[in-house]
Amino acid sequence: MVNRRPLIAGNWKMFKTCQEAVDAAIQISVLVADVVSDVDVMVAPTFTALALVSDKLEDSPVLVGGQNLYWEKEGAYTGQISADMLVSAGCKCVIIGHSERRQYFNETDETVNKKIKAAISAGLVPVFCVGETESEREAAKTFSVLDKQVQKGLEAFSPDDLKSLVVAYEPVWAIGTGKTATSEQAREVHSYLRVLLDRSFGADLAASIRILYGGSVKPDNVSELMSMEDIDGALVGGASLDPETFSKIVHFK
Ligand code: PEP
Image 1: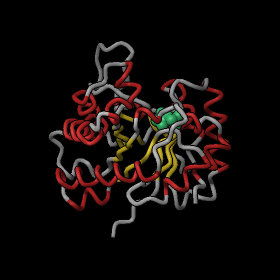
Image 2: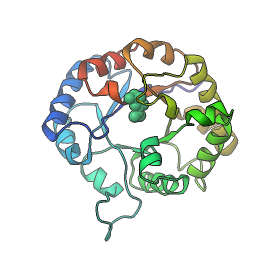
Image 3: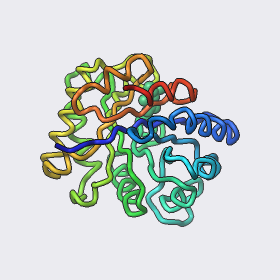
């Protein structure tokens, strides 16, 4: 029986100035100090705040993650940030393939694949986001959409490459909408994702990968979600912006 340590990750998206991010990160590190022996906690500020936040969290187990990266190591790619640059700013993790990036910034399964590869090569934990839109769910395409996202996103990796991978199931219709998947809807998809991982990479890896749920996670729904089999954590958007609220989510037990 594999013991998957829960991970609660906050995605701050394009919110918070540098000072606001530092203040929030410090508050979070204090508020969650009593549970970090049992739960991994991550915050993902904007690029401009990463180094400052990492510096302030140097003595805290709270992890810092990027919200995106570019797969090339360096070069004439105005506006892009490489995996090594994230590492040099103190990141341990990076969110890849978030639905907002797929929707607004032309992220595809192919670019997601390249980004995961770059993250792993640099020693970053990739938090690989997948999920269906509302119309795909209504058309009963949830599983086929996930099949494709997982297959293409993780194409050409070996089980060994993916030892640190975290998957985040984020139904697009539940992100920032206040609609949460029911705990049973989420469990069903998480179990399905684990079967997909098992088929492609074997039982050992599938059993060890953490699968987070994301989509309007709040203090009042996190405990039920976390009680479900195959739900190993949460990727939290809106509710991670307020340290007190995020801390309540981290204290889901
Ligand atoms: C997210 O952006 O990953 C997310 C899940 O957002 P929210 O919690 O606001 O739905």
